[in-house]
Image (cartoon, rainbow, N blue to C red; front, side, top):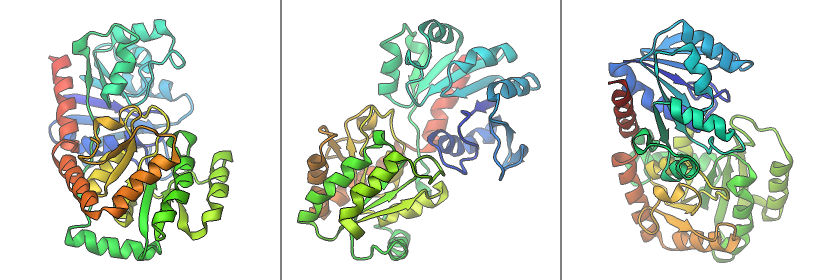
Length: 378
């Protein structure tokens, strides 16, 4: 099959500036390139050519301004059996005019069918016109099916994944060495490291995590919170919320460390410094991909019962799930439980790694998507 992936207008592909969608595409693209013809459309970036063929994959990059029109123009020059529009379902109607003979799939990584983002009449038209909808979680699927009448055979959950081979669990020889090296580099050799990786936005709940440190340090004096990320992917500029976080962290001095944004290719190494990984999401998270990464890295996970998070993290099996997600004390209790019970922490980490290898691999994601494409093309 000739397949097209159309990224959002936010970030380029490959994921040189991060992004959950771009990282997912990077992970699944090689599997499609083995047996299909694959073209990936995204925005331009100064470090990338407008056009290239890399590892058998065609990359076409267009300006961010008038992005949809540029993409439509490119679609008119080519013929595809299946066009997959990532997280921009409304654009399907426009792209279909440019490629009327192609089958269309749209995937939801956020609540893009919300009436605040798409008028109901447009949403109904998209649902009628698209050949298949995939969602990154059951939660995201419900956001659509609760509002609109979607045929069950036209919407399917396809979880994202991870390449576990890029991550080094601390119980492996390579992981032990990398952990020693990275902990020296971050000056946390003697610390119990609580790790946060993600965008510094209020919805991610970093402020609640900082506020929990008062309770954590009362029991674990060597605890240190390492916050990895900027206000946006590859953007370390300050905004009001980031300034607030730094102010909130001041009383803790060296017990809280900000690293700013770290490129995605280095994140597998960064995970090795962690004794506990925390996803402190306050909003209805579609399903944060950091869960897959932390599982692959063999770091015990604490997450919140928000959105789709709990679909991949099972309480007391491969992590801890917090119901009282806005409570600093709830986070502190969970963190102290894992810092104080290394045996339990290791058991959760082992199970997480196993699930990353068997249930949430990019190979599984690609296989499920391929089934969707074949079904609608036949």
